[in-house]
Length: 133
Image: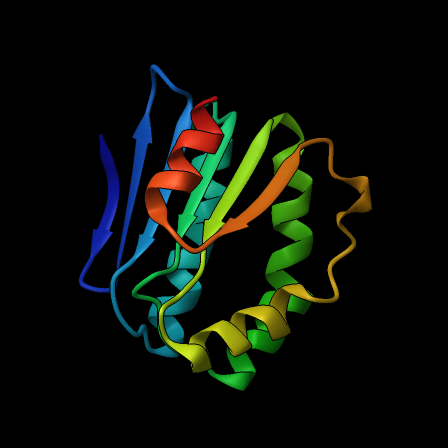
């Protein structure tokens, strides 16, 4: 079931699998990017999410100011909400600049306190299969 849809992002929740699937579809301007990121938090609050698939294949570069916002403001909110997750899979962007901006945002997060598996993949099918295994 699609729970949030814009030209640049789609967020779906699959109740049977307790899976939240976030698919970035294009570049998102600053205000749109932040609104979409806050939808992550809202979905975690509203649905019984155990598995998370972050599909970044079509994601594009995130502006430096938004990278800073993500690290300093969004990440602490997100980390408070993910306690019930069992697994997170991220499918890397095909755009090298987008990969670098993503790595810059998430490099400094302390993942040691997370209670679940976090894996990155090149291919969507591999990521989804790992999540559902």
